Length: 116
Image (cartoon, rainbow, N blue to C red; front, side):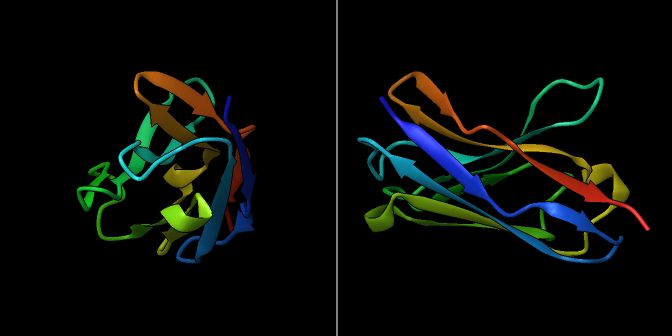
């Protein structure tokens, strides 16, 4: 079993920055994709950014590429999401995720609200 504990999030003005962090408790490995998804009210959950540390691959949603940066430290079983130049459309609940050989584990979610 894997438990994911998130921190960060909050209220920020458009153009501002936030940093989300997630730490995993349990057996995950650098080959397991780990990253962030988000779900806005009335919308489906969508991938934001994912890291596969063993291969060095990172994946970003088109809507956040160039503004968000994912970083991962497998030795600490941690992943962070640095979010810059935030827009109102980034408002959502953000979830940490790890895919351990086809089994997905989720954090409890953290609210990010971008508003003036």
